[in-house]
Image (cartoon, rainbow, N blue to C red; front, side, top):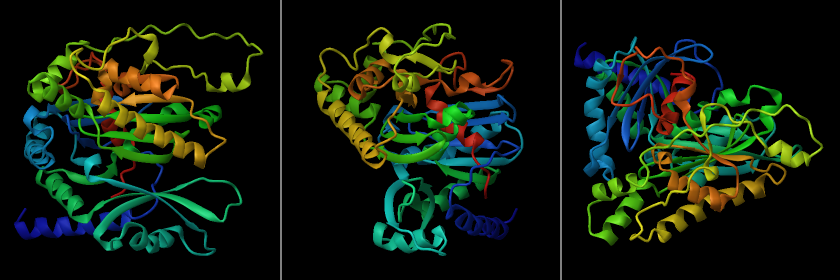
Length: 415
């Protein structure tokens, strides 16, 4: 393909992208699952599934980020974009259709509320609100918006706007085209994470379950709250595992890489905890307590606080400050939800993300949040024979860091 043809193709794709993304989130299930590309901080992850219930693994490939690139967003992204074509080629993926997740560190979220106007489309109201609420021209952004169901009869509309600069989307589109794949979807990590757990809310009774999802990453922590399948809150906190490593390194006179290894030695891996058999006996217990007691599927690794206790960091490092910042920020998210939805208590915490492999930090947060808490292994329910091509990861171990990639496979292909 000549340069002019490639530029014309990219221009057409970007034009279509703008019109499709600047709408409400479409909740539909694709028939042919694309190659999902997650530009995670700790690793570049590529996953492809075949449709079904449960889905079947086609191929997976991961590339860990070099330690010196973890805190450097620009150099890390350049490294991943350069490695992407080779990893796709080597990974044994099928077809050319691909979807990408925009990294959380490049994505912004704004919760806004404005009066409802009869006979005016919500998309038009949102576009008109962006200059005042975000201080930018809507044409410079690519955004999605989600209407949050509020109180009946209210004259106001609550909306979550998830947005990114158009130049950033342009760069990812160019990278996909250079990797010789056809872009068919582009989503935020927030939406992908929620989609990864849609299967938990199939029954009518499941739709009343309210979940707090905490994605513990290397440099950021994403907080999401869902009512059943519906995202009602999203936020990024600039604290992650690397924050702890940097603090350990400073206090213990070592490099961040050495500090990370010191944390890893506290616990070699997250082990599965056998779950008790389900009880079919009916009792006259407190109905509110019964509503909040949720049976755990096999993809959850047991109650966090019922597992052997593990410290967050080495004994000679004081991590109180970064842990307090992270805990306080998540509690603020809880309080916001409680103020906006006083009748909808949170039922559980679900930990995902690469840092969720480290039991110490999940136990610390579970104690502070005072909710039933589990670490999820999203890939555990994916059917596989063991013969599928898998590069750079161990499918025999829990993989909480693959929630975004899994959800991206299942998200709409709307480009």
